[in-house]
Image (tube, rainbow, N blue to C red; front, side, top):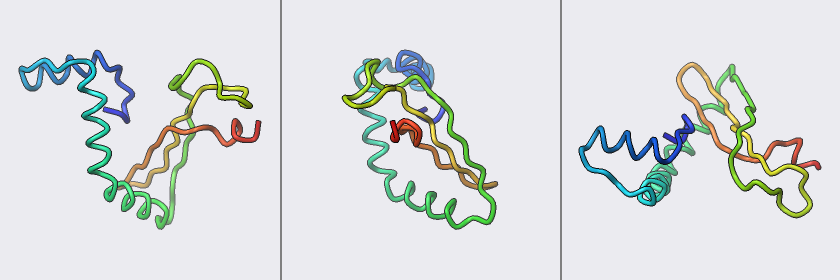
Length: 103
């Protein structure tokens, strides 16, 4: 769900259609946080395999996520979707752009 950048209300609708139970809007982000904690070791392995791969495709895509106002000392508040992938593995994370770190 995180990878596809689906709004929370839509995630609630998807879970309701799959399970028949309607979770609260606040439950969904908490569930994602718990899932991310459980998958920490998997994330590390995928990052390692992508790093060791012969050919890697990398991309930095701007997304409108995070606060609307930039942090003190920053010009932009947006974050970016950083992606590295091979034929078998994809690793993605939202973060600040290298360009915005220099500003």
